[in-house]
Length: 128
Length: 107
Image (cartoon, rainbow over all chains, first blue to last red):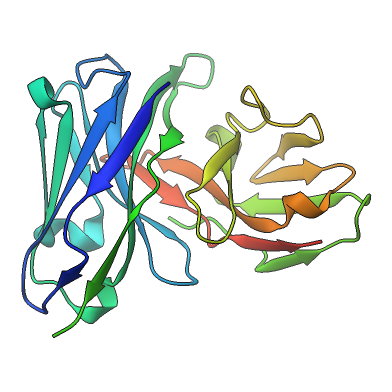
């Protein structure tokens, strides 16, 4: 059974850097077409995609947060690490990591993502 | 790139709930749907517009027409009360994941 688990600090101060780790099991970070996404959710709000990284080490970042985000992966440890700099109280929320799959629709000629397994999430509060 | 969902849908038990997701490029892109109950992580309930993952009840179905995709729950049960989010892919330039604003289904 594929699982993902987020870990990291519960509380960070404004201007600090948040570092979150996603530990995955029952699938490999080297599997073609598979990767790990980070998604966050402020209390009572919508889901917001942050970034993802694939087996090829290809990374994509949310345009509005790109300057603050860095993704890396350690294949041997089955871990993906997300760093977010200059944290602000508006960044308070639940951060999820999830498995993302990329596929290609030949008939339509387009790539598409689906997120099939989610971690339980970790709550982060930004406060002094 | 934006995916638009109604903020809320309300139905009585046993009725049919329809939740829509609209976006300019959905005529040429797939949508996934996720169900999220309070305090829990989202769970995929539909992929590629109309494919139901293993374990999802048959009362959940999906359809697509032009730039609008619909998640239909036939014979809604109390346990279906949750927030539902659609998700698609922005293929302009670097590919991104995009979520809709979510729809709160009240049963």
